[in-house]
Length: 199
Image (cartoon, rainbow, N blue to C red; front, side):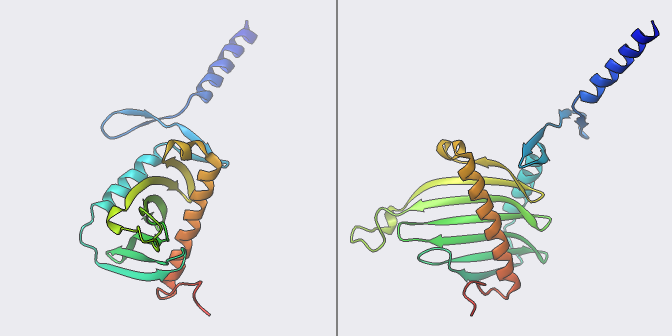
């Protein structure tokens, strides 16, 4: 009988240990904190809420205290990165890359001095820019992508169905954005001079 009782207690403890934790917010709502595995890093699903709230906070800023800029050479026709500051804190960077068939705007949002969110807008010209048919007024938006990061880890992507199906390609693109983010910070720290253009 004692063995039977021990088994019941052990089984009950096992069930309790396997249950996922729940989180109660100040409004009294209960939200199960589900975890997402990504590159052997575990990220709380509610990180998405933090990233979105941070994006909305920064996006709502209308009067920046300072905007600095630097020329960059990441595409065939060059580009520029702008740095947006509020209360002496870098909140956002916008990189514009110009090519012969279109251009891309990439907004980098910071949270605690780290990359939090990337919004990428891709525009396509109606023809090659050196072609007689080129008409800038006929430029069309091609697509947009959203990359979500928390604690230096990429954990979510929203884009076209084809892109979302290409997990390896999406992860590679997310890594490129992280590398560009670091490079743009180096440019800022270097007095807004492109580190690749230095002798």
